[in-house]
Each structure stands twice: as structure tokens, then as C-alpha cells.
Amino acid sequence: MWARSLFCFWAVSELGMSFRELARRLEMSSPCVGFSVERGGVIARENGLKLIE
Image 1 (cartoon, rainbow, N blue to C red):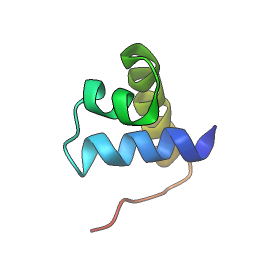
Image 2 (tube, one colour; image 1 turned 45 degrees about the vertical axis):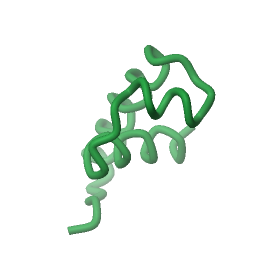
Image 3 (tube, rainbow, N blue to C red; image 1 turned 180 degrees about the horizontal axis):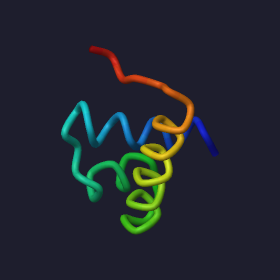
Image 4 (cartoon, helix red, strand yellow; image 1 turned 90 degrees about the vertical axis):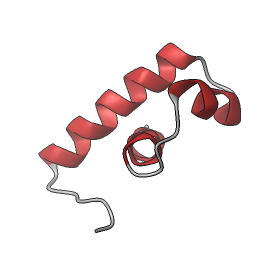
């Protein structure tokens, strides 16, 4: 769960992928991707994780 959420957060934040494109590539629904992006952001903040700078 952590890995997918962090990956979705990274893909949207750093790569600029749309929820729709990411959902297609990961075979997930767009709302599920949106939830994963939000959860990934929370996980990153709570654990002091930073994306590649």
C-alpha cells in the first residue's frame, strides 16, 4: 500500500502525469489513483520523506 501510494504521489507531483493516464497505466480507476496520491502525500509528510530534488 505504501509503495503504490508513494509512487502515485511521485508520478503526479514530479512527472506531471494526469490521474487518468496513471490509472490507465496501473490498471486502476481514476478515483483510486486520486486517493493513492493523497495518501502518498500524507505518508511522505508524516515520515519526512522527500522526493528527488
